[in-house]
Image 1 (cartoon, helix red, strand yellow):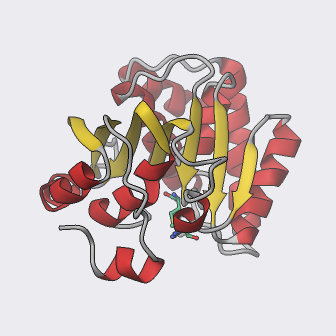
Image 2 (cartoon, rainbow, N blue to C red):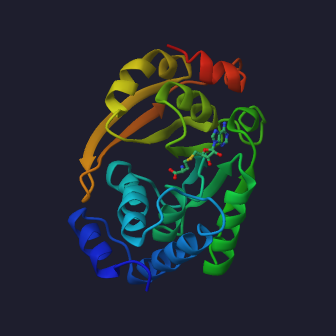
Image 3 (tube, rainbow, N blue to C red):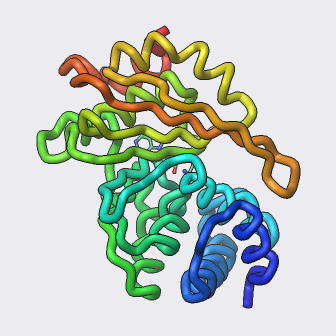
Length: 238
Ligand code: SAH
């Protein structure tokens, strides 16, 4: 056992999140693979089991508390890194159709090995969000986009909203800076066809503050978006 499973269970109960014992065992196996691999390949700054439990597993599963995700929904995790929030989400909800997108191949190699070992189905996609969302096969095709720790909300909306179907959602997993970023991102969200639907603040058991922002896609993203990576990062649509 790598993580304290009874502690994880206790927190999930406090959150009113139902996660099966089998999924808890799989979250433990995933954590073990992450901590082990992270010794030789830089996958995440969090290296200890308790940090993984709270800042990775619990934080990722928080999505379910603030977003109602229907059975079989398609979800793209933009800049998933070693799989956050999407891999804990898939382990807890194996009905979900998840695409793991990142521009760093070694992180996706790790995700592929976890999917293989745990016999999970998911699609691994190597590339840059601003290039892939221009392709017809992925543009406005997902029920949900999720992202954590990739860019400020304005830039991030340009990286994620083009993937989301009209009527779908972008769920941004932010820290305590979430509300201030939302103020700055209002123009961008509107220009990209989004509308902020809910903002929820939450404190994790270690005291870290989290903000989960749900943005609904209400109209088509103009084809001029996303712009080039440098424009997205240097000139956010404020
Ligand atoms: N979401 C993970 C990883 C955050 S680190 C977590 O919360 O732990 C940010 C990740 O985003 C990195 O792995 C980086 O490779 C990826 N990334 C940054 N910009 C990207 C882009 N434009 N397209 C695809 N991936 C991107």
